[in-house]
Amino acid sequence: MLPFASLDRTGDPLILPVGAVLLRRACAGDAVYHVDRGRVALGVLGREGLAHQTGLVEGPLWLDAGDAVLGLAPVV
Image (cartoon, rainbow, N blue to C red; front, side):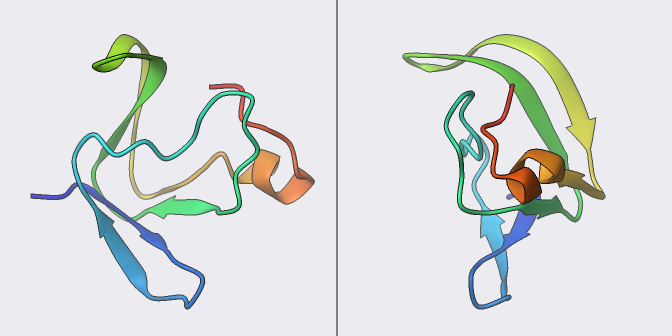
């Protein structure tokens, strides 16, 4: 049903739906995501979802943790 999880501000795991947008290029976020299992597509968003896929990562991994720790906006 849902491929990845993150932690909310309470520290409880969140299950997010397929197609959920986690990060937007050049928009600093307020969360760091740990993907416990599943896949996350990287790419360019269009009006109807992912318009151009530039990469794919598979958990477990931290998603763009370096930018979040430095307070920078993600590149992808």
